[in-house]
Image 1 (spheres, rainbow, N blue to C red):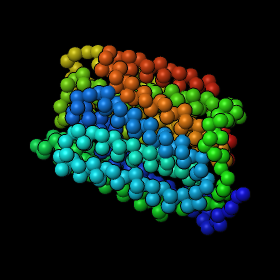
Image 2 (cartoon, helix red, strand yellow; image 1 turned 180 degrees about the horizontal axis):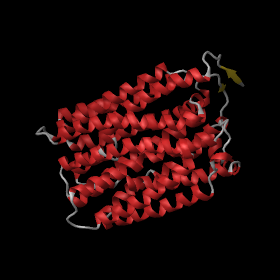
Image 3 (tube, helix red, strand yellow; image 1 turned 30 degrees about the horizontal axis):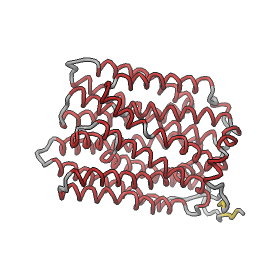
Image 4 (cartoon, rainbow, N blue to C red; image 1 turned 135 degrees about the horizontal axis):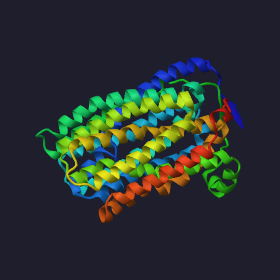
Length: 424
């Protein structure tokens, strides 16, 4: 049975309001995310505290796995949620509270035997809730933002978020380079992350929606598990997209180990690492705008192809860097900047998915993607173990191979711009 929500606003009115609020949301989220990202600050924190690359990789696994788990559990029922903006706002409050408690534990200096397991629990809860929120955000975004403005909005979120993160990077630099005690340094960073992240969620409460069906009888998760093969057989383009997305998760795990790689190989101190973080954030600012513009002008498919070319070049550069001795700090900074430019390219998956998938199919397709992506979250930990045993070169060789495969899929199999149904 389908219930109808009474329309109050036109799509153009909703688009205008939500575009602004989503930009503010993305800006505040990115500002806060930089302080608690398992692939950057948390990895450096864990590696400094324990000396283990594998544990740093495990934190990345927790971030990715529990995010996908939340996505899988909630994606089938996103069309049962009548007031999606309020749902996202409430879930955000739950997701972010853990970072406040982690900051408090750091200030109290509870010791790493308590701190490390508690931190992993907080990562799990935070990203599980974030994963539940993400498919709702995707659906609400695709329904309320006009198709011609989607890549522009994602670019705006990346740009202004990057600017906020860039300003925050100087705070990171000052904090990590200060004479504060280790636990107080990171306690302050986690507290800042909490403040920005909790603030980002309040924008959801002011967002609007358009007329849409509320599904009171969604396909159960068990039925999706049982019928994955038949679901995939229905849409050839989605099958290729899913294969591309799967490979991209692996290549992303390799790319995002770059900060740990140069810290380990170059034996860099916190001050130098803070400069690398700044370079990476500057790169993300430019990358977010770049990929949004490329996708808007030439289509998300062509933007994906371009990202993979740069991925191959960056991986080759990383192989050269980690295989050399006496590398200057400037080279590390350039590499970090390049990684920053490439990283926002992952948003192109979202753009392509929203352009090519009909609204009615999104809950099931999102669930299938999450089911397949969950085991791949373990790749981060495996890469960490691999780097400890044989170094980083094999990891970046995998990145090159994966980028070549994505390039081939995008070039030969994905729908071209003129083949995409504009009504999706």
